[in-house]
Length: 577
Image 1: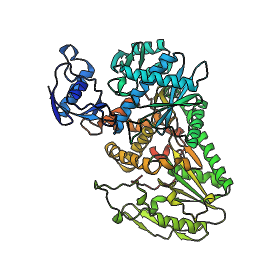
Image 2: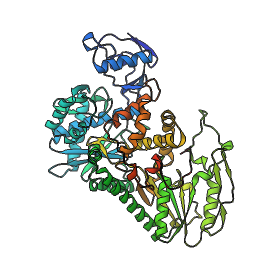
Image 3: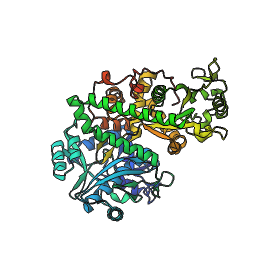
Image 4: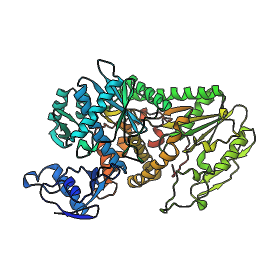
């Protein structure tokens, strides 16, 4: 069988792994920056341990059929995946976690470790054991991880019946996985094994533990941070950067999860089945309302005259601005809502980049000087005519919208770039400006070892909103998402710690609602679609989630209403967000 790997043709003999072919072509390297981690075949991701041409005895294996179908659909073309792309980083993270949990098993077999969330380049991990976890324990773990990497154990999947998998994890004490697997819709389950340790990370992994050479561990009270490679130089582990505001927000959200008794998908599914999800919704929404009230009180006590609200795409900025306005009215203020979108420069002045594309997330899309002048004038008590951006014509218009800040008035300005320091000139008295960062910081897990990335939930939100309100296809939303994420990394995340407060807009119950809207759309995407692998990953993840018909329980002012419809606040459509 002839296969083309990164444009180079090679003959594959029966039993050859993709890795064998990659090595024979001289495409394997020691640098994580260039080393192949997995393979893209017809849009799907495959481990390099896969064998394109198996013997007759393996011909009926599901993995063989999937591989053969992909090879046929690709015309024998294979593209190697490296750390530079998001899928490569996911493959590496899963492999790194396997090494870490294997080291935990060998050193601390009675301890329980849970991956909470990502903070920058670090994964926050809680450790529960009979004795307090120490810095010396972290040193031992680091050494054990390096020993496992040096041993270069193969990372190969083994397929089990669902019953055998449940019994395996029951005997191993991984109760969280047992609970999750009871919701699995298939009769089989794949695990990765080494010795008597078995685990799974819901996606392809590197060929062996020897690939995971770049990592580090940083002790924290009650656990540690597992640090991933840097994006700019993958051969170097990222440094731990303390983000106190973000850390405090995650801690608060985890306390909320404990209060609501919902920290995993299995918890959520059980509540959907027994009907207690309705009470979960009421409590979750009440916690959100209390947090908005707390932030409004902070703003009131500060004596702020303007509130700037920023956050990544699909974080719920518009609803947050409106809910905050309601709470400020309770305190006797008269909020005036404005949007940075209305300060977009006219499209005729926008220049495409070197690829002929327009970066809608760039700060230069905003007429910063005009915004500076208007904000300064408003805070000085002068009357200003606020522009309005017409997305149909791509131009700003002046339509007689005059604003003056009276004594009880307060500006609420929301937009992607609202925390960018360029928006606050030295002439603006900064103590009169309150900065709020909002984002959907997901804290619910699949199980103890598998977090649900915040980015994935925001993407699901956006898919639903784009389809329902803009008629946009899944493919169009996915096609824009990489550019959106690049913009967030450059223009939003660097300023989140400068905020005076952070509002976590994630709802622990939202996946059970979003699934009903997005799952049929994902299932309709055909395997020959360029974004099929991303779609397949989300489908596999959503298989574990029970959908809930509880729209009548969701308040009309809920953050979730901004995406599934029924929001009673006025919101302006913005195709660039």
